Image 1 (cartoon, rainbow, N blue to C red):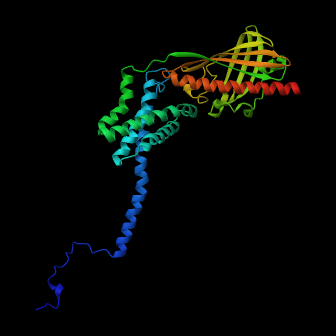
Image 2: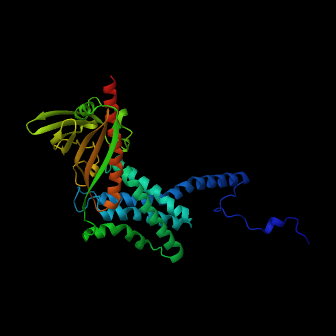
Image 3: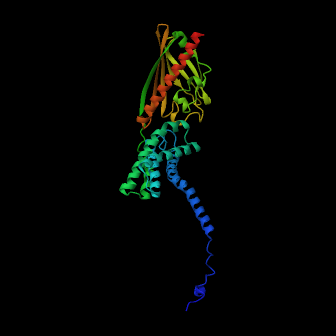
Length: 358
């Protein structure tokens, strides 16, 4: 016989059980979950980049010694291995989330390097000049570290966390054992020339006295584009020791060029003389300071050769580079100084020709 009330024997709901959600509440909850996931996705994608940048920043804090010291940031082990560690940690953290493509292994470390360098500027560990000069090398080495870690994680199955982070400790370990402290000197020379439509005497006057130099006259040189202050004036006087040229630049930089070897209208050989206060703190990065531990200008020679009514103006600049990675630093210095030489010759050409035409 059919029971007219089939729900009579059904178990009563427990007072402890929550009441079922209505359909519209289910939809709202699902929407909130989807929104949270959309918000979390970019954060999760950023975590590997942040991790790599933090490793690099931690290493930079360790390698924060004075120039030439055992923990200087210009040591070869830091310059070469820190970016490799940044790239490796970035890719390792990303692979822990999900498998990544080779393109990610190569380019994602660039973001970590950039973020790390932004952090060093924020904490005033580095200046813009050094960052611009070293970023290309760091980016390439970080990509190498990322590609190697991607290969190890994917094909060799090597993904143990302690082993990965021991790679980040490698620069510290090698420094403790005195590896990579060599800083050989390398003396190089750059020569350039320009034809000036003015007599040697007019060119000579500009070489000795250049006042009220405008930034627009010289700022096409790359060294000024990346942050080196532009010159303001260079005025010469003669004393018992020879010629002395007082040079003033932006940010309070000032120094002397002295010469005991010159012939008026023919040539002048300048040597650089820096006082303890020639370069105020913060005016230049310590690593690229002229006369510093890693770089110096050892001499500049100007030669004037008559060419009919014109003058061929030649410049020869001798400089020193002394790092453990001169294979990178020396060509970089050669390019910057060569570019500066071209710019300064054009400056003297324009000034001399304008004076001759006046």
